[in-house]
Amino acid sequence: MSEWHLDQLRNALERRGWRIIAEHPGNDYEISASWELARSKNQTTIFIDFEGLDDMITLPIEKSYGCHLRGYGSSSLYFRKRGEGDSKKRQLWQEELNEFIESLKQSV
Image (cartoon, rainbow, N blue to C red):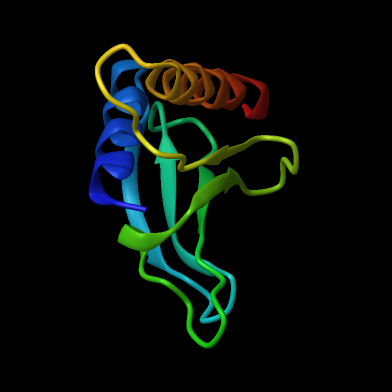
């Protein structure tokens, strides 16, 4: 969708103590790239995969349309339109982003 999705996701992760320790390339099919996350040095890492399946190519991470927590099928985030100001679209994005970040707790 756009860089702002990635920025807001990164900021939300960092506010909750997560660090992106590596960005891995995608699989040249449906995954654009993956972020490897950790909260402490002793903790197992988890991965967020960015979805980029398109007709003929795999989209770059900046154009991915969503992401999911690897190994946890129901934990995903769709990169919807931002909306303006205090619009319903903006509120929905924020709610879904917060729910996705909260779902990370379930994975560790």
